[in-house]
Image (cartoon, rainbow, N blue to C red):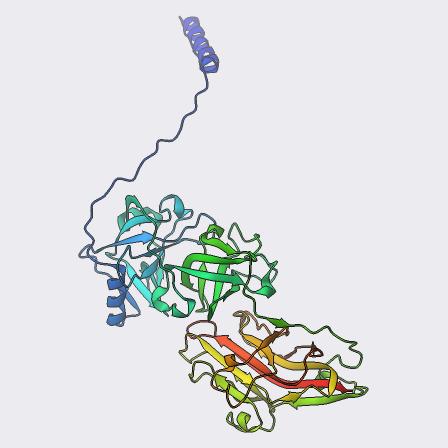
Length: 482
């Protein structure tokens, strides 16, 4: 009997090994589970939640666990390309005063569960809302901070409807963007990356850390704006497009309180034209630079051949900002606001400073325009200056030249004159604001300019927005008399 069971056991073993090999292969697909259409009556909008939070005056507001409060929203972010991490950006579905907020979630690849354009019902019962500088965040409260909702609890607070739609967006001017647009999807036209950044990647340059900021130029709008891309984005190695484009992306508040645009992926850029709207640069063919190579302040060689100093200003002779006008400089704000260049002193050195910080000017355009410098009697002229920037928020300071600016008639509007931009080396600041040294512009050739010229330093920043401090000193023009 025992041998019988042994034989039966062996037979079953052979059957288990060989019989499956005779079964033809079949492809099995995971069942596709569609989200059920859930009928929930929304009690409120994100717009109302945010306004109530602002009126309450609390740093963090925690919603009561005694009752359910439902808000309907649409997902406007996607982490499929790696440009977002463990957060979901949602905005009001429709209506005036659309507002948005960021929901912290402990979930990677959230696009699979909450794809772009999907409608959600958000149950804020027991969740906490925190806001700072127009950016609002929803999650769980942990003492004095708001943290991510655990993955196991997401279905309790974020209910999918199975409905998808394109978020409501309208074309908006960059200068019209405000804190109310943060964490919402916006659409802008006529954008391009700055000429100096062409050939660079979205976020794979040696100096990029965390999120890379690339300045944007708007062809018909002077407002400063930036594109932010995570260094972990799948498309970080792609080159920036060279032509003008339309952008539909998210306006966010960066870690350093910088307002910036973010793409879900590069498809959010729609190319408009191969042409560009660059400023008109004046680039004189450099003559023989022997003897005219450095700013005299930094030179140990006092032999300048037959060079002559045509103009020099180190601001040591001024006591107050208003003294700039007394020495022939025009200190203007194109929007007739208060943001201007101001006199500063530090370590026995006097210089001028400009910054949009604290001005509350969403677009601050300030001009510092030199007295007239006669270039008719000289040749091989070169411009030098020293600059120092704190923080790296893009190129907010540019250098221009004009031969038809009238200090009397054009004073209210520098744009009435014809200005040409100079390819000048300007300090770019540092990521932590620790920049302490002035840098030299090195020589900028003015050899092709004739007549009485004026040099202008134009600052274009904003508050809220990019508001880097720039310091200017030792403005020098040298040349050779004919």
